[in-house]
Image 1: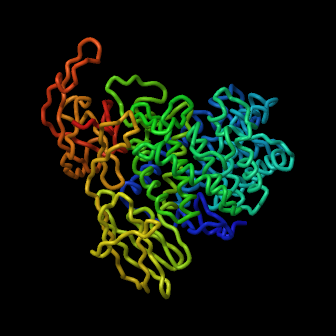
Image 2 (image 1 turned 60 degrees about the vertical axis):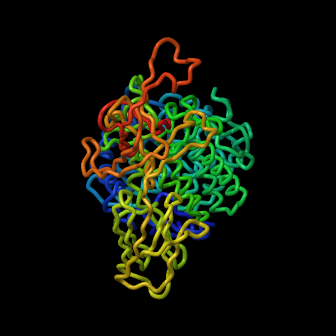
Length: 630
């Protein structure tokens, strides 16, 4: 079994791993307020109940009944429909670990029993191929998602096992994992699923069970990727990251979610094997992605075609895909890089993603979701099944239960330990428990930059408290004294601590205008507004003129306006900016030999910005993160 079974979280490296930081469990951190606390409350009260209803309505559970021979009727949904149930199971398990509730153990037990009845005697389990294509098992790996679904089952089983759920879910998962080992490791089959995900899941299953063949299979799947072993699904080799071996690839390509789940698996295998070449290549791609392929919100994927990364600096705001699942996969990858290196830049990016690309995925009431997260919407946008406004559910519903499992496990990503040190990566009000340490955190972050830590229980002797200093904080103090972060982005306080000791961290939340790299053609000559970790946007609902007529005044004064309750949104902080409304006649072709300044008229106005993650909660309408400079 795992070396640290008491740690109840999604990614827990073994004691013998190369991890330099050790995670805390979901139940070791109580988040009692702030946006993250609100998300967890809404997740429990609204999102998870909705997801449980959809497991029946959308077909995931009925399909498994058909596979078990207990129901008739046509198969419902996509070939990867099983994965929706697995992510929902994981969400329920982490929520039960965080705050036990009635019905959660029963849902896990009933699902585990159904999966056991649907599973073939040899361990194979996939309702689509058992019901629809029993003669094509593992024959369509380029698009079948068979291993992808297995991976999500393994992660659900890990969550259930660590949360004390019904042991049958882990038993079903092990039978399927053993089957994969028999076919693809010891059996000599070199097949690879076109959608990476099973790799990181196999490593976590190894961490729970100690079964090394799971780790070995994960390593083989990673080593064989990029060797042309995945058949062409019609999307080309880049789509499935099969164009180059992972150690040779320098930039993320293809389907963004697949790339980032693959990266999480690559770092996991490094952690458990010590293969430095895997960490090196993953960091290399991370640096390229952040510098050239990431949106301001932390979202990734600039092409709707293939839900894919584009070329370097190809970052159009209106055509941004930025799938919600990609934001989640980014958190997975960055968390593992943080555990592997202790470098605060990965915690910085987790924060950027959480408060922007990820948070925007869900409505304020927790009942509607974005699949695609653009940085601009025009007032005449034509909606389809995935574009436009948030939806309650989708035919391809990979995102909603993925969001739910992430929100339920947010406490896992707040703090870590290393020897006689505790590192705080994300600032939330609540309580952090780490061994003999109990630390209370009082803060109104991210609306206010003051974070107070009170020691309620302390270990004997000296120990260190490491506090992340975000790269955006221009002036940071600890107990009133200016501090400069160390090489890894943290300020470290080492002393003999006693109950009642306090530390006050102050981060600089002065709002700022942000300018794009000149090679990002789509937003050249524009600026955006940020405050602390939050990216802002301009919604038509708040503007005195047509949004598309607005331009920011260079060096515009930015004024902070707290709002205790904004209709449809709740608590927020608005930012008022000096702007002009520019009106230009629209006749004939929208091109002229006369410079626009000679044709337009301008009027001074005030533009109002709202946090990007809170947009689309007050009706349809135009939205822009980037505004042109006047």
